[in-house]
Image (tube, rainbow, N blue to C red; front, side, top):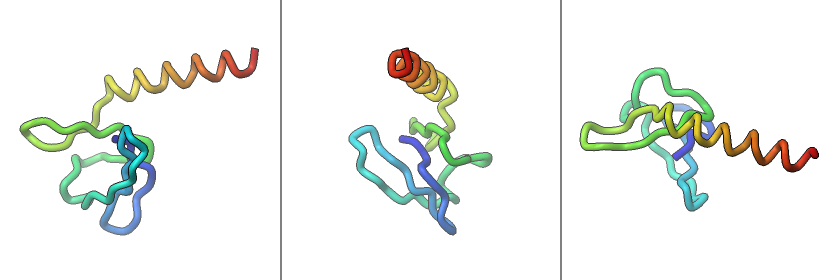
Amino acid sequence: MIIDRIEGDFAVCELENREMVNIEISKLPKGIYEGAVISENENGYFIDKEKEEEIKKKMEQKMKRLFK
């Protein structure tokens, strides 16, 4: 999921299916920010830098195709 925005004590997150969910900031890792990609494993939520980079590359490719 991607953090769309932070409102008060909640992070508004967009899931892969485009559904929006609110998650308490206290349940997320320290250092979260708008645009961060959050994943979850057995230890809880974490900032998924690998997935962020993958999404960034896909967006760059789309932009290049769009503005050819």
